[in-house]
Image (cartoon, rainbow, N blue to C red; front, side, top):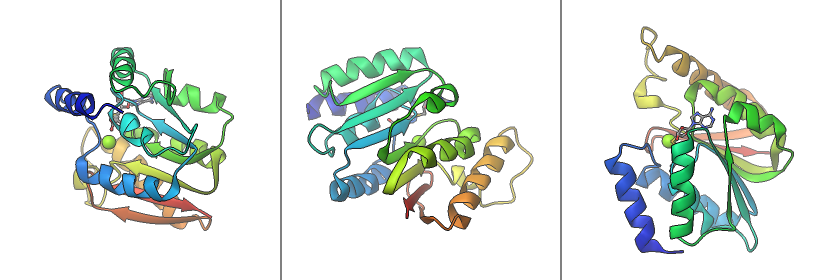
Length: 195
Ligand code: SAH
Ligand code: MG
């Protein structure tokens, strides 16, 4: 992998205010991936490919990442970035809305990373649970959403997102087949191990 190109991609994304994964969040996920050496990762929310490119280093031999993005400009940039960093063959991008694409997938995954529309997290969880391997891990970014999720925050245009994030957290903490840890890194990271 070309680390110099990766650094440039990160800087450009930050300049353009694309919400790429934060450094502390990335560190936590990389530690998990290092330990697991996953064969298949599913990512919901590619943006310009930064996180997927970072994760690709930790795949097992012949491992693959499927990642979904609905913004076609970002898909285009992600494809270019994947070439620049020389990780083609490891990352497959599905173009379109994850709400439509997920139900068409019939794969199994060792890791699912949810990092897209917050209002859809409960749906993404349902689809992730359908495809996750036993002992797999579902990781969700931005679950604390700037503190709104834990506060008494109801009167805002983002209240649908907040309500759905709360529902997501409720499900992962109450489901007996899921063991969850929520970390205050980045914008809140939920790590759910599937029993
Ligand atoms: N994982 C990336 C950042 C993703 S930002 C990284 O860390 O580098 C979230 C992305 O999810 C945005 O690009 C947005 O267009 C996309 N997105 C949001 N809702 C989506 C949906 N329902 N289906 C597909 N993509 C979605
Ligand atoms: Mg995020």
